[in-house]
Image (cartoon, rainbow, N blue to C red; front, side, top):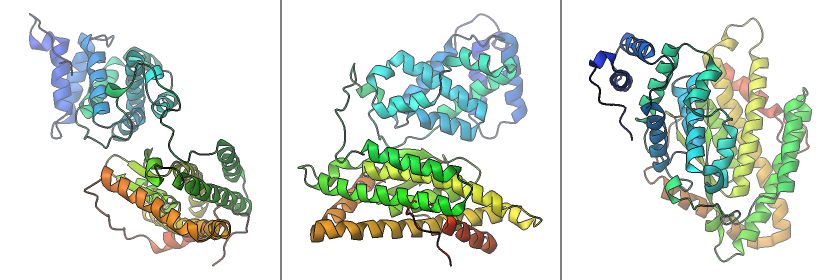
Length: 413
């Protein structure tokens, strides 16, 4: 990384490069009082009120590039900055990532998944563009810059799920790395439509029918894709992929429990990095698409159900312990219902494929387990948490009403 230091004949207190370096060093230390960092960024604002210190953009870009080499992806950087620092710092991280992508030619060289992440980050580019969009005072802006750079320099390495910029070709070859058993876009479009309707309706019974139908549709498509992939020379192993999903506060852990429930019911595995609010989901492409879509939809439904359950005069239903218990219970019950729907789809598929289906699904499960072991050789299983009984009961009732797309009425009891 470029050092944020330049030679100067002025005293250190008058050299913005020196002050910037001291500020970054202070931000990297846990025991430095906030007042010290505030004093340094205020001084920096006086010395460089236009945020035009030449080495700063390069220092930020180099920090991002280093993270890419350590397994990070564009969306990961913006997410952690937002989670650890602030929404505004998250936008700064996105602007830095976008500027780095422009200089590295990511649009023509990066994998399609990488480019999709960049597109989702917005169009604000670089430090000047971010500052113009915020309208904050120079001292506040410098504080965000300093804290972001300090954070980027301290983040741990992660598993490499996509090729890093160092390994990109000069021009991306479209379709060269399509995994076995790709997702049928027509089926995916139908699923998206069903879930969108489920999210808009105000009637739990209708939402239940729409979501259940979506689950059944994708479950059967996943089974058909598994049989097709198993007939190819590479087998099930060639189709296993991994992607990251990001979990925002509040209640990131109960949300992770919901993701785990959805993934388990659909043949995928989840590895959680709780300090970062990042979950890695490992499975076949069709299963990961369903997990992503269904998790997003059910999280929206859970949030709406929790708001309904928290209304009223009882202070207990508005307490954090109740909300946490509600979400944990909701996730557990939804997982049970999704498993039932997938088992039903498997039974129906067995009528068509016969006894040959069992070893196909077994090899598919084994391939996912092997990929998880390869990516996370030192994986530890976390224990569950004790939750509020009232919240648990309310969450279970709400999960029984959640729309899973099967076309049947909500479960009772």
